[in-house]
Image (cartoon, rainbow, N blue to C red; front, side, top):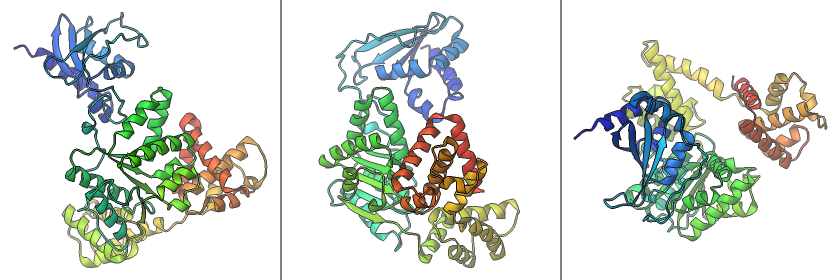
Length: 477
């Protein structure tokens, strides 16, 4: 049997893999099956019409160049779109696609036959290939974020217990939704994903999906732009356990909130489980539609606090054991006594200490730990103030901070004031009202509007995005 077409396609894949992101390669190229190579025509099988359309729209130039390079200048590509179960006897739709100068324009109509035996209408999946069975959806969970790896302490006991109860009976407890809140780096994402992993193990047929609120918003924006809003809604309504991380990112995004409101209602009424995380309690989440905020309070709201000394010691012990690091008890006690903010910084301190020891070929001793922690704590304890942020922003624009307090519509002053509000919201613990009062004597609604404007400009204006990044670097120096 001549398998030269397989070798030829593998050569093409090696070129393609070097030119696309890993996630795009796995999503759009790994599922392709080479079928034959005859008369300079390479035939490949794809799972759905949408799959073919997406390849044509996004990757045809890359495919054309690659096929020409490997097969020859007269090479052509033929797609076989398998409709249905991909079993023997499945009906097929074949589309010939020339890769030479007579290539078909990308915007040409596709005359696919309808009702060709597919099990269900194709629903576009923003995470993986559209049209697949929902059981095949990638849950986007990290394997290491299990309950076993989550250190329990007084700081998180209620949240962990509630999470474990939900995992044993998703959608069947009073904890729906389960909203876990707390400052950054305390383990909210770990715990939320641990619930998902436990559900997957206990109920293999349930569809679990983890998604960050920012990614959800981006997917929604793309769906609206591509006129696929209904597909977007249908996809999320297929989920049995939806884990939405950093829900505070929806602040000021009215249309995204409205869409999630409908998804929330559908899933909740269908007995599906919702798990949310946030950096604030629901009562502190300003800038949300009241009807959506009220639904966040339907189930259980559990907070995660900064770990106490005992929990910090247990985290360090678990981390050193897992990584095979030998550190004395007095060194761990010193680190646990001085790094008190959150779990992420605690683990970061341990990594920094190990790096110092390895690079400088020094034994991990208490003096070395003190030297490293002294530098780290100095950086951690630096609490950015609104006045300091205002000064950095004004210095960047070569203006005085007093100009931020002037009631004016001058573009440069308005933009500087909006940036100062934006960074104050993201980099301090001050309330929106406090930020508005200190920057121009504005109200909390003005601060929300400022943050929305900055986010919109970041997405659409390259030079403005560069400006924001430069100011952020100065604030973190």
